[in-house]
Amino acid sequence: MNDIGKKGVVIITGCSSGIGFETSLFFARNNFKTYATMRNLEKSPRLIDIAESENLSLEVLQLDVNDDNSIRNVIEHILFQEGGIDILVNNAGVGLVSSVQDTTLEETKEIFETNFFGVIRTTLPILEIMKRQKSGIIVNVTSVAGKVGGPLFSSYCSTKFALEGWTESLKFEIESLGIKAILIEPGFVKTDLLNSALMRKKRDKHSIAIEEMINGLQEKMKKGIEPIKVAEGIMHAVLTDSPDTRYVIGDDAISFIKMRQKLPDSEFEEYAKSEFKSTSGITNDS
Image (cartoon, rainbow, N blue to C red; front, side):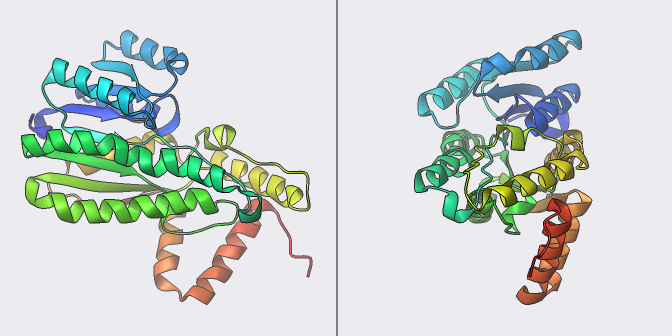
């Protein structure tokens, strides 16, 4: 394996926009050999143009985290080119904004397939490479939603909670092999998550509340941190000799997690309700 201090080979999923887009450029600009992957290559021209204009060591590859053949093809290509993989950043994900009662089981399975099983599907073959190297870093981008539940995000939060637990268990198992596992937990980020979310808008008694919450969340995201801040957090984590298990990024995420740790459940729920009400503009009619 390349000494990370002397840069190395990194593969990042979900690079068509947002966190993945900025993280791939940030690593390439810091002299890492960067493989930026995305499911839909029609979204790649902007990233390719920037990489070419700056003469960056960045290559864009098609990768669908739900397709074993797609993952295998990318790994084989990188191994042929580089001989190894030093860092994996699992960033690809989808959103779902819906009340529990309006969400079908199939929709929940769909979001788990990408956000949770997609991470496992991508990680396992790369983990075998890192085991042979006796070194490597696996970075899983979760969210403050992996620590704190919220209305209309039951399925999304569940995938992130699951990924948190899976990564904790993985960390115990691979530390002795010279491999690190790191969680990145951003708060609200200025991304297209809501625009690309599998949003349900049933015309029933819940639709008005959902629309109000979506509008509120969009406003929150407009005020969120820039994706580059998450990229900087990821870089800091991988360059740290003994990284923490978790890196919370964004003042809102830090506040929420601190309150979750500090308050008993009943008091935290009241705190969270007030935050969500102020976010969405929903008022209590009782």
